[in-house]
Every structure is written in structure tokens, then in C-alpha cells.
Image (cartoon, rainbow, N blue to C red; front, side, top):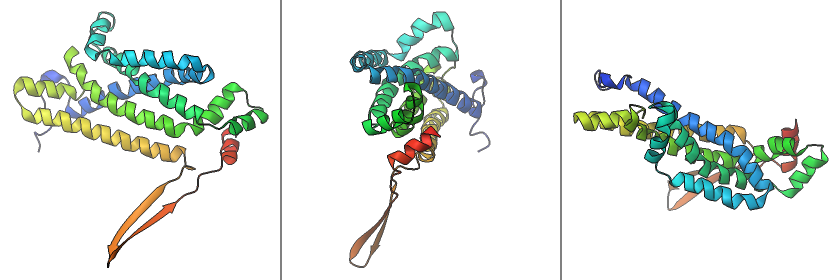
Length: 245
């Protein structure tokens, strides 16, 4: 076990150093994509005719192969982490924009009217009312974008050891060492599962008013009994008052 995590010195990182590199290259683009998507989505909500072309543009950008992005960017950003992270940030827009738009549009008109009556302007209403209520949809998009980004980081191995755990996959094929391949594949999968679990926990913390169904199935005797407990959602009026505070 002592040598299980030993990797070739030409990778310039320890195994856990590659894990840190992988997370940095995966999560920073997702955060950047979310920050860019928020104002774009709000414009799409306010000007409905803008949504179809924006969605089409993000879809076209998502269809561009990452290697083509690398070829274009490498002349400007070189063989660096930035070259890997820019395409990942662009790809995340195709997930974030519709997720935020759908979440914000799900806010009822009665809630918006109540916010306006309480003196909230468009910006405060968006930040303090619409976004908090849209958190479940946004977190759902965030989960998809994050897991996708963690997977795609490995492609960075093709531009000079900038693929995080993907560097191990390349080294394993070059040196014919299956152990390195397994470390890359299993490590990437474990990272994706752990980060997704953290995002689920964050959603539960941010939206304590959402219903949670927990079921226990007990088999006994001749039948099957299912016990389910449901937490009632927090009323919209109370949610609005909390957001304004």
C-alpha cells in the first residue's frame, strides 16, 4: 500500500497534488460560469424573445470540441490551467442559463406582487426573492455542471500535464501501468460523487422549507409496510418575509 499512490516524477505532482489540481480546474470554471449566467438568465426572463437565441448560442458553444477550444486558446494562454478552464466555463452556460431561467420563472406572480408592495425594486426583488426561491433549480443545474466539469478536466492532459487526475490516465497508457489508469478513473469518479453529495447537503441547508420524503420499508409477516414522513413546505409569505430581512 505504501507504493500504491506513487506516480512518475515527470507529472510534477503527488497523487493528492493532482487531486487538488483537478478540483481547482473543475470548480473554478463552474463558479465563473454561474456568475456569468446569472445576469444573462435575468435578461432572458425579462426579455422573453432573448431566451431562444441565447439558448441556441450556448448550445452551439457546447457542441465545439474541447480540443478545438484548446487549439484556439493555446496561442493566447499557453499550456496553462487557464486554457483548460475557459472551455469548461463556457460549457457550463448551457446548463446554468436554462436552470436559472426555469427557476426564476417558477416564482408566482403573487409573490412578485407582494415583494413589489413591500418596496423592493427589480434588483432587490431578483436577489432577495426570486433567486432564493429558485435555489433548488439552480443547485440541480450546478450538480450537472460540476460533475460534467470534473469529468472533462481530464482532457487537459493533452496540453502539458494540465488534466489533473487525467495526467495519470495518460501516464498509465504511456508506461503500460494499469495501476495509474485505475487511480485516474476511480479517483475522478469518487471526486464527482463526493462533490455532488456536498451540493445536495448545501441545497438542504439553503432550502429548509422544501419537502423531504424519507421512507423506511419493513418486511414482516405476510405484508410490506412503508412509513413516510413529510415536512410541510414553508409558506411563500413567510419565505418572502425572511428574504426581505
